[in-house]
Length: 386
Ligand SMILES: *Cc1c(COP(=O)(O)O)cnc(C)c1O
Image 1 (cartoon, rainbow, N blue to C red):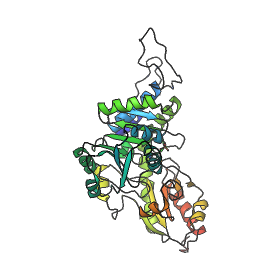
Image 2: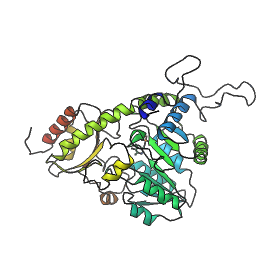
Image 3: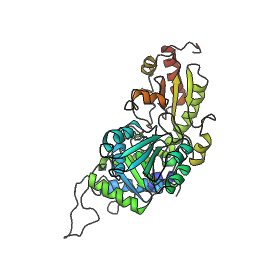
Image 4: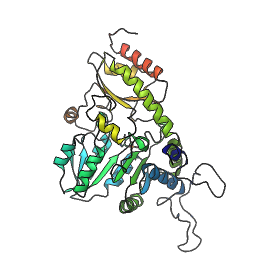
C-alpha cells in the first residue's frame, strides 16, 4: 500500500458491529471480562484502548516499525523512551535538540544519574570521534530545530551499531511521509503528534515506534507502568489529522518554496536556512534520506529590522510556539523554543536574537508573502518596493 492510501486507511479495520467507517471513540476506563481471566484483549484502558490501538497500528505501519505507542504529549513520549536508561548510563545527543528534550535530560534525567554529552551530529566525523562503548544511545533530530541542520541517519546508525548502541530519532519535523528513520537504520522513532501529524494545532500528543520486538516490549512495559498515555478523544483527533497528512505536506512544501524565493531576494534578510538551498552543508544527504524537504524556514533579520515590531505586525501569520499546523506560525527561538538553553550556549549553536523561525502553513502563499512584506515595512525596511 502506498503511503497516501495508508494515511487514510491504515490501522483500522471497519467496526464489525456497526460498519462505522471511522474509528469509534471508546470512552471507557475498563472492559467487562466474561469470566476470570477471559477478556476481549482489552482489560483496562491505561494498558490498551481500542481507539488508541488503531492510532498505534497506523503510526507503526507508516513508520514501518514493529509496534507503535501513543502518549499524552511529545514530551511524554520522550520521557517514557528515556526511562529505558538507568543510573550511570550515558547518551549522546544532537546539540540542537528541541528545547524541551534538552530540559528533561538536563534537569530531570541527570538527577537520576543519566549522563549526556551534546555534539554537533550534522558532522559524521564528530559522531565517530565522540562515540565509545560507554554510550547506550544517541538521540538526534534531523533536521534540527531551528537551524535545520541535517544529520546523516544511515551513517550515524552504522556508528551506533558498531558500539552496540541505540539510535533514537525525533522525526517530528519530517513525518513518515517524508522520512522513515527506522528504514534508514534507527531503532526508535519519536514524534510530537502535536505538529504535522495532528496538523491543525488542536491537540497535544506524542508517538513512539520501535524497530524490534525486544524494544517494543520494553516501551510497552514503560507505557503501561508510567501511564503517560493518549486518551481516546485525542487518539481519534490524531487519526483524523493523519488522514490528510500527504495533502498537507505537499502544500506546506509548495508554499515553502515560494516563500524561500521571496526571502532569498529580500534585502532585510541576512541569512536563510533551509535544506533545499544548494549552500546548505548537508543538502545532498537531506535529499538522499528523505523524499522531500521540510516546511520550516529559519532566517536572520538585519539589525535595521526591529524584531518585535516585525513579529507583532504580522496579520495572517501568528506569533506562537509550535509548528506544523495548516496555519502559518512564526516564532523567536531565542526567547521561545530555545529559552531553556543558557544564552551563551545559544550563541555558540547559532541561535541569535535576530533569528526567526517560520512554520509555513497551507494558506495561499501570495497572502503569506504580502503579510511578510507589510511587516518588513512597519519594522524598518527601507527597500521601498511596496
Ligand atoms: C514540539 C516538539 C516536541 C515536544 O512535543 P509536545 O507534543 O509539545 O510535548 C518534541 N520534539 C520536537 C522536534 C518538537 O517540535
